[in-house]
Length: 272
Image 1 (cartoon, rainbow, N blue to C red):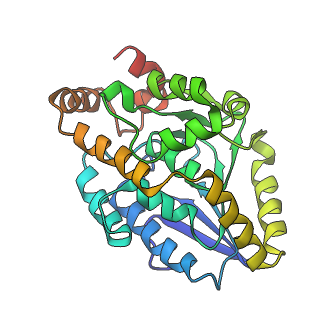
Image 2: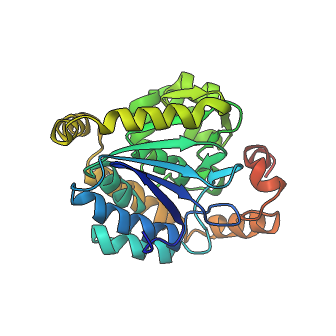
């Protein structure tokens, strides 16, 4: 697995465990997108791994959001796989891979980080440590990586409005109640639970698992056109003067650094 830059991997049979390790705070940027492109190409072959478990090497951050200084760069890397500069379409390809994908979440998962876990097939989170949020409204943007599509389908219309317009933080218990994740699990039990589930699933015939996945995706995944529209709206808003000014201001407050702003971003955005 030497091809990966920020995914630290290990295997157990036909389960691949991939820990995101992109200091200082696991931003989603060019390196992680490159790794996802490489991993999806491996999983598309369908002959090595039945299950992939994503986790974080950082106890405070899973993926807090994109690197807002490198949006154009990571979108172009995504285009190497999906043919156009769209994180939403890259994440849709992750949803379509020939493996069952599980997000094991501890720490902050906001913005495109939330959209990444929503693209996974299942999500389990630390009750004590996981924090969720969609922060785009605070910058005058649409969530462009699939959150509108996923959250409206899973949370329902009213709760999707709440999450997407508030730019607030949500703990794991509320995320579980809303349907954002499968379960909130005590932190001490989270890894053992996910490991056992992944290894159990990997015992079953691969074709049957993929047939189940294909049928669930046929019902639940948004269309390419809908995801493309969200992605285009996000990209357009990055050029708005107010959005650029808000980016500049919050970077000055400590965004993308290990500190109070990132740890308590929901509160900071409410005061912004």
